Amino acid sequence: MSITPSNGILPCQTIEALIDRGAISAAAPFAADQVQPASLDLRLGDYAWRVRASFLPGAGRTVAERLADVAMHRLDLTDGAVLERGCVYIAPAQEVMRLPAGVSARANPKSSTGRVDVFVRALTDHGAAFDDVASGYAGPIYVEISPQTFSVLVRSGTRLNQLRLRQGAANRLSTLDVGVDLTEGLAGFRARRHSGVIDLDLEDGHDPRDFWEPLEARRGELLLDPGEFYILASKQAVEIPVLQAAEMTPIDPAVGEFRVHYAGFFDPGFGTVEAGGVGSRGVLEVRSHETPFLLEDGQTVARLVFEPLTERPTRLYGAGGSHYQRQGLKLSKHFRPWTSNR
Image 1: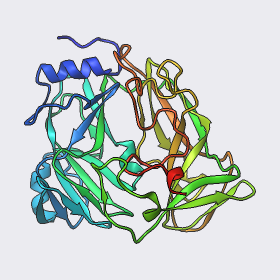
Image 2 (image 1 turned 120 degrees about the vertical axis):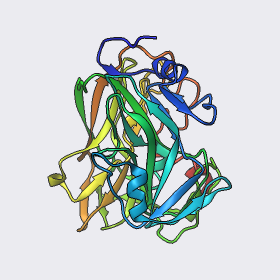
Image 3 (image 1 turned 180 degrees about the horizontal axis):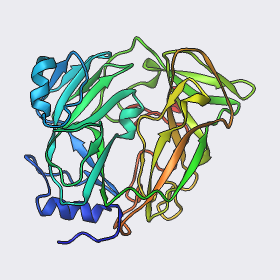
Image 4 (image 1 turned 90 degrees about the vertical axis):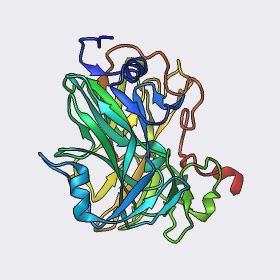
């Protein structure tokens, strides 16, 4: 199997070909829905370490070697374990990489992970940056997990982040500024700090009222309190063409003391008529920093960066059903719909 010589993001059929040839492997069989239209979900392994500090291994050192310096204790994930808010954990992923020369990868939290304010990053042996997997990398992937607002229940096989694989150098096609929707009525949700545990493998199983407070915008404004976590929605609909993928990135922090969007991958077909997603909005995960900040309707808070795929994917986002296609303001899949609880 040869990879197409054009530069760009690899579609699902090429990812599956890499799995078939052993360039991506795992001890457990791959799940049928693990490969998305332009990304691969990573699964947690059988254990995790509670660590006293985050770290990068750097050149010449493995993650396992650095763990010896910072590990506090090991948790067994086979029957599930609670990861406490405010703590840092590192777990091996089940997937192991043996990437061909010229193929690199970038990791990002899954949308459902970001929406419950779990900060997740990937590490590799000899890595000098989080979330980047070097071209031709051969070795394990590790997942750093730091719940910020809620304690969470995870287990072996839980999917918290995903990999986007790329042939050649990054090739940005265009960018799109994303504004926030603060029209009158229900405009967002603010996380309740003293809540129960969220089971990250349980869908539609949590009452949102136990974890979230609804917010109404007034006069097109919303005051962000320092240290609080918010779920908001984009002002404009988002559409990802079938031959492109996109990543939502924060804008220059000089425009405001807040951080938007931990989870940034948008697969081809999101929001498109062809995949039944017309009108889909981007959900924004927002955290204010040191000072209160008054956010205004339509204010630019993030940016979508578009890249080409090497070829059209054989399936599109949401074509076979999705939690987030055609979404408006929406909490993660772990919660029952808000409207049924009002």
